[in-house]
Length: 581
Image (tube, rainbow, N blue to C red; front, side, top):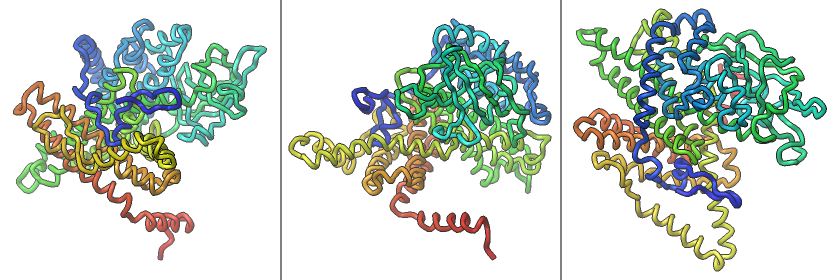
């Protein structure tokens, strides 16, 4: 599918954006991506070494109690190569693909979420900017030491008054021509690895650069810890991932050499978002790993624990929990590795897909670990067992790297951008229909096609034909409801967050369903229908539940309780809380 036109340029193709237009480009998602044989062999060796290390050294419970991870453990991770997985071999890393890296993060998170946070803070976002945007000199200076673990990286974007709202950023960088340095002043908040990181990827406002306008733009800098004026607060106490290091970082007129400007001046915001795309994917992969661990441990308990003459695994309420945990995790895994495939093929815009993965996987893990605590009963609540720690650790994932609310906002509005542009063009064409007959005819034909014909997904295996028809039908319906919402609200759609949430959740579910159809089709083609019975059942269960969620969400765009919801919330805020007799 060709990308949308932006000015004179054509944007990179995006699979997920097509869903909002009713398009399913099967060529982008079939066959389901897999690692090449050589990379898989190398990855298996790394995972084997890491697993031996993790069993002996990754004591997540101790890290949690002591609220720190020994620096020696981080150095050992560096020696194993875990801190340089995605760094090109030229600079001392393994040069693995995003898919391979996410598989490692999945395994790390099965053992210890705090360790995964340290690794992700360093590799997913801490050094990713250097890999993507660094000059050859910057890569040579920083990457070898960071790949080995000699230097740990940190990503410094969030501020006390600026999280997802980058426009509120206060940290400033002023160029000192005489000294050829950028003097950075400001405070960054909640910085993972900040207490011991040697290199910070710092975003700051720079005046009079970028597009040349008087407005302030954002630039990115590589700031070594040993520069004068860099300081950090004591480690913060947190609900979960307590073994990871989280601090505020203060920059007091720090003289950063001009050569440490990363990328072009004024391009920092775009760079920050691109870096976070991979970070969200690896976070989602970690959620998949933790969910698998919770399922395995809960099944082991449920098949042994007896009540009323039966194992509790025989009770339907427990079975219902296991079915939901399995379907959620299977879908999240399919989404993550379909998206890593899009990322690794190059030239793709996978920003929507990575946001979708992060939202879905983080919430799937939250449901899964909550069920795990319930299935394990009293044991689930006791700190001598891992379940309550996994529950606390899981909660941050809904906040990390863009809250799920902000990401839903992004998914909906970015996804609706192209349909909105199409409607604008049609509106202009209607004023001069003779000169734009082709555009109007194409638009009318597409609407008629959606109304009377559901395109067949040709590459889905026949064993999943009924599920494929549902997905195709509701993709068409999503496009129709998006068009209707845009017609009803126009530019005001930016403020209609109830609608945005429903549209985003529908698109996320559709992407999950399509990922499952691709993944399970690949399994059937490789192993046959009979050997793929478990995967087929999981796919059928998830899709049968998900399309009903889509139907409900889309129906509530026009028929809902939004006014009542707003009134109740407004009363609570006006009253200062719960003020009922």
